[in-house]
Amino acid sequence: MALASVLNSDCADFSFDNCQPSGFGCGPGESGLGFEATPGDGLSFSVRNPLCAVEDDGVERKIEFLHGTTTLAFKFQHGVIVAVDSRATAGSYIASQTVKKVIEINPYLLGTMAGGAADCSFWERLLARQCRIYELRNKERISVAAASKLLANMVYQYKGMGLSMGTMVCGWDKRGPGLYYVDSEGNRVCGDLFAVGSGSMYAYGVMDSGLRQDLTVEEACELGRRAIYQATYRDAYSGGQVNLYHVHSDGWTRVSQEDVLMLHHQYKEQA
Image (tube, rainbow, N blue to C red; front, side):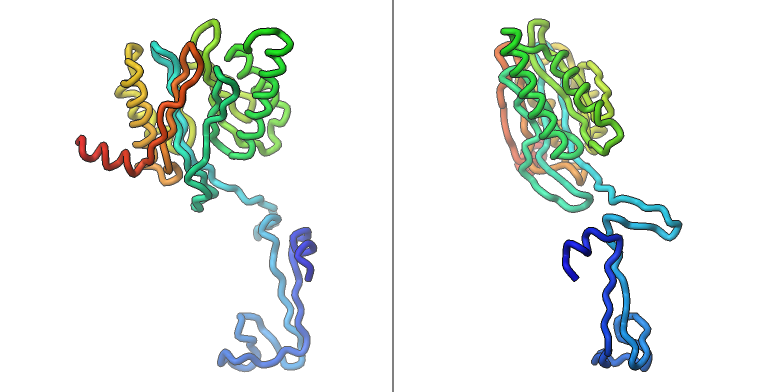
């Protein structure tokens, strides 16, 4: 049977005529594969398409992939710190350890990725294009609030259609540092601290114990790095590397990229 027809159908039927006895030592009336067969009859069975799985109760259920990540952003007196891990997962399968979860929208704006990697990447790159068009039309940089509103309006049109996206839009404009959370349901929230993903609770625990408004740049970077490390240590769906950015009045700066194993040895020695 052609592969295309198997994929496009709810189930694939396989029939074999003139079945020969198999050499698995099975008794009469058994094929050795768990299917009943009688001499002279054909063996027939079907394989269901897992993408169109129907349970015993007759309800069709789609495959649901579990999304895992840890992304963090917070404001302090010198701007915004953005810290993310780099692991991409599909359920219990680790798809990649080197995903870049920070989208550089323009020299003053950053976006983070949590949820579906394709959804986040596509919509934030589309946002980058819209921000550039705004600059050309208005002869000034777009504000963080306006950029986040553009993104929320774009994804709201597709609400309920299966998008999976939880992103933070961080930047600096004439009002100072800005931080917004935007998701695929069209929610848009302004705040001083956000952590998104399966490891966010662990990151919040570190942030609650160490976040102060008067942190220095070095202290804030170390706090963000430690928060992501602790999340990767406790959350199986987070890991890889810790990527750290600092957003300030002159734009964003990539501070560091460190492997979580190296950080584990470093913090273990300090303990």
